[in-house]
Length: 273
Image 1 (cartoon, rainbow, N blue to C red):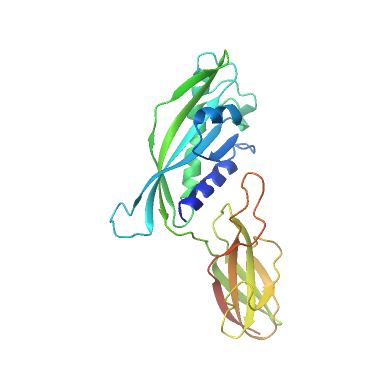
Image 2 (cartoon, rainbow, N blue to C red):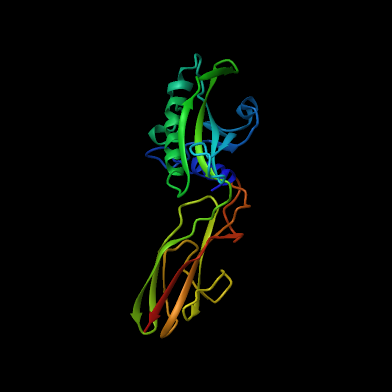
């Protein structure tokens, strides 16, 4: 994944983070931006996470691979707790009006734990490595008469590629069931912000379909299922499985809904009796 994809993936994971033991989002707002923090404080819900790309270095370890980057990223966490006259609640937490299952009333040093959890989830995406390297000092300012806002910057290193990448499905396997039927299973790609659906195509003989529009379509029971039973009849058949991605939708207002990009095919040739 390149820098553009990694930043969108990181935003997706931060927005998806739930407060531990709860079901509500851990962050009130998450944005990839270069806007000043002061302006964000006036417009968005807390806890607020602002993600910014910084500088990058090509292959910092060996200086040989031109398609590998170390991309520096800064995440600024901003927290405010009502009726915080001295800034203590903004730092270590105060009145937890939502109970133990919500981020409401939590301090900056509590919320940062959720940020670190999201970083580990980015590392679960094949080909991407992200690590927190440095924290800034905590800063604060007062809003109104009795409410502090506290924030802290976190510098993160992410190793990315120059080119975009679309993860394919893996481990496509088939088991003959007799009667001209075959059971097909596979492992889905990693969870991504732009993953839309799986598309399975079939062709008679030993050459799998080359594109998501080639051959004959196999109907799946949902967009992101991991198995299907197909009944092509007796003979030799080849299958090609594609993961399809929608990279242009707005993460703040919708979900993937169209097939804009295709992964490489995961293929299988099997005899069906």
